[in-house]
Length: 145
Image (cartoon, rainbow, N blue to C red; front, side):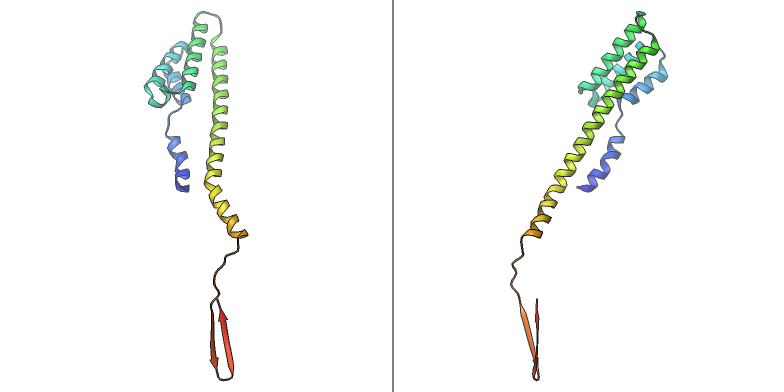
């Protein structure tokens, strides 16, 4: 079981994040609305992300900000700042939830061991005592175990 937890970060590291998709789209497109369309396409093609609410929220925010830039309501720099701020906030919340899950899993895994250890310390073991005695001449030697 503990080996599974050691491998879990390696498995999760292989998962593509919204940030990875955004970086790829930003390398291909310079306009924020084009980046948002690319991001939308990538998220929809990702089985895991297409079913999650948070990536959809992020893509919609990117689309709104891209439209605001296209209509002259915001500068590109302002919109990118807003989008990056949203990403950081979402990431911090997800990291906090992930840490809580890891702590809960560790507690669940260690809890039975803790209970067993505490019980073995508090409950004396009642085993029958066996004694072997051997005599040699006038002396007798006994060993109990």
